[in-house]
Every structure is written in C-alpha cells, then in structure tokens.
Length: 344
Image 1 (cartoon, rainbow, N blue to C red):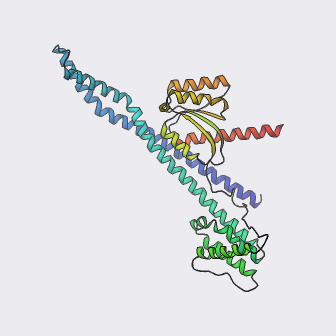
Image 2 (spheres, rainbow, N blue to C red):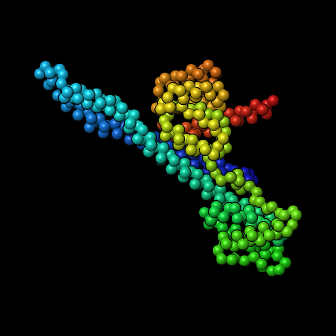
Image 3 (cartoon, rainbow, N blue to C red):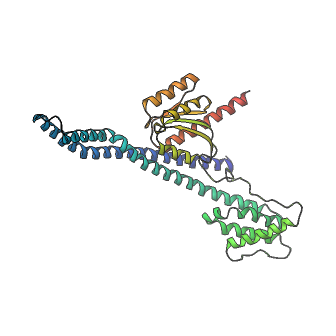
C-alpha cells in the first residue's frame, strides 16, 4: 500500500466516522423529539381535561333542571366543543413545536459536520499551496504564485497557516533572486502577500505570456470548499412533510442542481395536482409520511403506479433523513446511468 492509498483510506475512514456520528446523533434527536411531543401532549391534556369535565358537569345540571336553552348554556356548549378540538389537535400542535426545535438542532449538526470538513480541506489547501511554491524554479513564477495564494488568505488565516505559506513564498522568491533577498516581511503577513501580489501583477503587465501559477489538487479532493450537496443534480418530487421542513431542505440544496418540487398538506389540492404532473419526469419521488394526509399519500402512490415509478416512502418529520434520501437516490440513479452507458 503506497502513501496515496493510505491517504485515501484515512480520508474514507474519517468521512465514515463523521457519517456514523451524525446517524447516531440523528437517532438521539428523533427520540428526544418524540419525548417532547408526548410531554407537551400530557401537559395540554392535564390542563384542558379538568376544564372540560367542569363544563360537562355544569351542562348536566342544566339537564337536570330542565333548562334546554339560554345564552349561558349555549356558551358552555361552544366552549366544550372548543376544548375538545384543542385536545384532539394537541398531538399535531405539540409535534409542530417539537419539529421546529428538531430542525434547528439538525441544522447545528450539519453546520458542525461541514465545519470539520472545511477545516480538513483548508489544511489540505495549505499542503497544495506549499507544493505549488516549491515547484516554482524561477523568480517570476515564484512571485506569480502570490496571485493564487492571495485568493485563499481567509482560509489560511482560519487554520493559522498564512504565516507558514507566506514565509515559504518569501524564501522561494529570494532563492531565485539575482539581486539578493528582495522579498521580506512588510508589516503583517497579509500585508506582505498583498505587496508581492501587486508586484506579480506588474510583472504580468510587462510580458506577452505571463505565468499563471495555480495549486494542484493533490491533497484536496476538490478546488471548491466542502459543501455536502453541491454535486447533486436531478428532479425530485416530494409529497408530505410540512412547510418548515420544505424550507430547511431547500436551503441546504440551494447550491446544488436539484429541481425540488414539494407538495405539502398546507399547499392544498391544486399544488398537489401540479406535483403529480411532474412524477413521470422525476428522477426521484419521495413520500414523507410525517404530516402527510392519507388522501395526499394515496394520490401520489396511485400516480406513481400509473407511470411505472416507485416512490421512496420515509417516516420522518426531520430534515436529515430527507436530505440523505435525496442524496442517496440521486447518486444511485447517476451511477446506474453511467453503468448503463459504459455497457453499451
């Protein structure tokens, strides 16, 4: 096993451990959410049921006294109906409150995951930049490297690497200078790289074919900073869930090429019908059973059957599970397309 294979293995294990941690944390959050819902329902019922019992007892006294009409009696009956409705809707209201908290916690976990990957990418960037500097074997190319470095100042500062990179650049420039050590610190390391950058631009303006020194991606997997879903593309139709879940998922996919069409119960039947019209051309159809009515689910399933599509049915009210299903579904479809194309 060579060094490159060891790097690949370490990277795959690192990503796998992050995924495992996220999966376990997601399960813990879901369990916590379920407990919060039950506790909220119990609290609502413990306050409303005694009130309903008192009203029902008073209405029984009206019956015993033979009083079958009157404004106060009607008001009591209406209040009893209102309380019964509140009790019946308690699980839904409690779930909505808990799901707001669940999505906020899931957002935090995803941000932490991206932060870890971004830090790793920045250290890999430093290694690529140091190798780029070392690969320059003349004064002008070494100076030109400052142009590439300047674009990554914020990333290098974030991991405390700007000083090391700038000093390596100074040493490389001076090693090929015919006039002695012309490159030196001028104020801060950031001010120094800006000074060398301006000199490099002057050098470029004096020649017809200027060097364009750029770092390779030998250590990084991509030139782009980590983003969990930017490489996804395809058309996804979702039925079910709720508006806050839809908004959270769309925000996470905003930098991807996913065309997301979402039909919730709140959107109404007209929007659901529009969603059904997209099923035939969709790369992935999902039915999120959390908050999805029986009629919405049945209509989506029937439409899928008519056009020969199989939907992914997931029971969740959280964001992470939805994103994972979209990611795995679209990547599996892309892989299948490549396999079929290579088999021709």
